[in-house]
Image 1: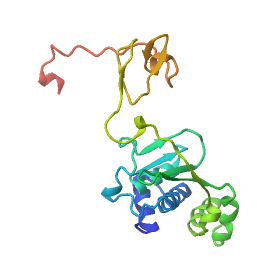
Image 2: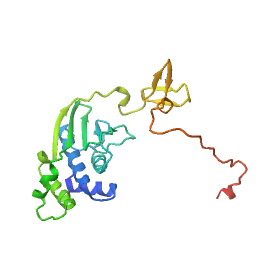
Image 3: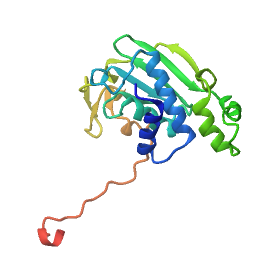
Length: 211
């Protein structure tokens, strides 16, 4: 695998700034990949062999995606909104999986591993780079039962909502009273429907006017 500093630099460039979360995410990804036996997750042979579940939408998640190359669009990065700075790494070839959690106690240890720094932010930024993994993370081997519809590759299943006619992929539809229903029509979505948008009629507009 590429060195920690190279991976951190790459992650910072993608994320947009350097922070303690980037350090944690890079080290978490390096540890998780090592535990499941994947040395270079960006090697083409591992493109669809590594799946990572992340449990928070914070800086560390961007770093994990950067190091592993896992992406939502490839269905190799999965998001569970638990609000916990943790990630689970799964080797699809071996079914070995480990969940790595950032410890809360690591904040207290940061001063010991960055004694020359005076601000808490700098102590964490430098301390998290220097402290041993056993102080920075809690690790547990886990089992993840991945349904076929969550696997990388083309959709295994399609359904059509009986209410709006929208096609639903990968088994995400619900059922009620013998009806197939998409999540938005089940009133369990993240948004509340107001009114549809009406596109302006541009049929009579010339190409010159459109410019």
